[in-house]
Structure formats: structure tokens, C-alpha cells
Image (cartoon, rainbow, N blue to C red; front, side):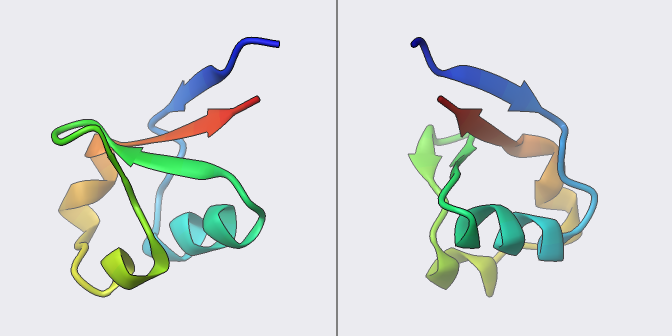
Amino acid sequence: MKARTITKLFRSLDSVSEALKCGFQVLDTRTLEPITDADLEQLSTSDLDHLEMRIG
């Protein structure tokens, strides 16, 4: 099955944290790098528009 990208899913940093805890991959579309738990401390709410979650 091909991975699907869901965009603009996140409305808070807590939802990003929950997605990571559930095992989903979250990417920063500006750098195409995956977001990790350690990155959460450096993110702000203005970064939420640049995050994508991969499912599949």
C-alpha cells in the first residue's frame, strides 16, 4: 500500500505529540525532515502549517 499524506491536520503541538506517540511519521515540508519528540520543544504554533503526517 502506498503512503498517503494528510496535510494541515495539526491544530496544536499536543496533536503532533500524540501522532508521534501513535507511531505516525510527521514531516516538516520546508526541510522534508521527519519531526521527532526532541524537535517538539523547538516548534511553535506557526510551524503547524508546515507539518504533514504520513499514513501507510
